[in-house]
Length: 379
Image 1: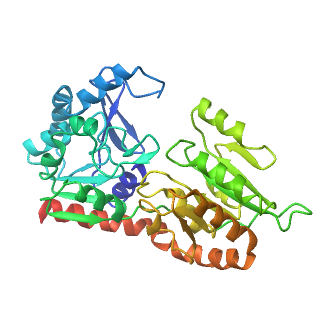
Image 2: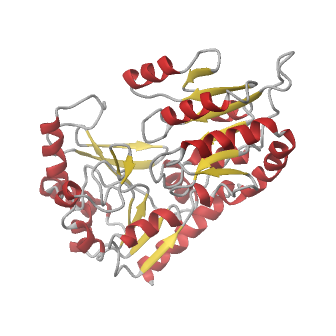
Image 3: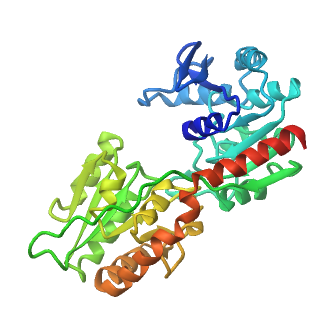
């Protein structure tokens, strides 16, 4: 979002940012005014320490349609007077943001990054399973959202999958403009691969990078990897990223340190130069995980879940492999396939960088958004 705002400013558009904060304030980041609205709820969201269940229920109950936020939102919109409101993340603001913008006659573009409009947890993933429908508790917290979504002037999915999911559940049914605009980033050329240590020339390094959480599938990845190593002993796994300390400790307890290494937060491009294959084992319907197209852009083939927006990046048997996260054996098989076939890895690696071209075209993303904003504001 910061790159988008700065990119639009560089194209001579006037840009202002509105965000929730611990307290009201106004500052500037790289020449862009940032209007910070103190969150009117029972606690501030950061740091993400554990909260009692009853406090979370109250927080989400207020966030269903937070009337306490309407006044500060209205005042900010009156100061900025935007031609278009581009709404990205609603938690904290709630749909009070939509209500105030519509009352002032400001066109709204809603960009979908997750499932907040249907699920307070934003993942539609519960008790180890993806939700096929909006469950009872979620429907309580999301009562007015489907109807109010029809007042949005345009909806943008960062993948076709996330847009389709919202439409299938009855949101944005009468929104006139429905569009997919893929995220993109200015990414560097692939780095030279780190040389293998002597005696490790045939060793294959797999890697995971991202948030170390349940929905990202790190635990089933470790289990599938250990199963694959029974028949493919010359492999290892590197896990980069951070997560809750108790969860990471549990993962370390089931992962032999000579096979699985936890490297913590690290530079993504450097990480991709150190691995042969990237694995994106998301259990939830991950809308468009950037690490997938980042890996591909560096010439690294990807094994990815056949869920969410991942199949819109990973072309099965072209730049990587897809597996069914409901069937762990399919991940084990994919790991073994690439571990034992260097020609196949080379073939997928050769296709990877080319397949990521549209995700490296940051100018293309700006063009598509700018055209949409113009259409909404003056169309």
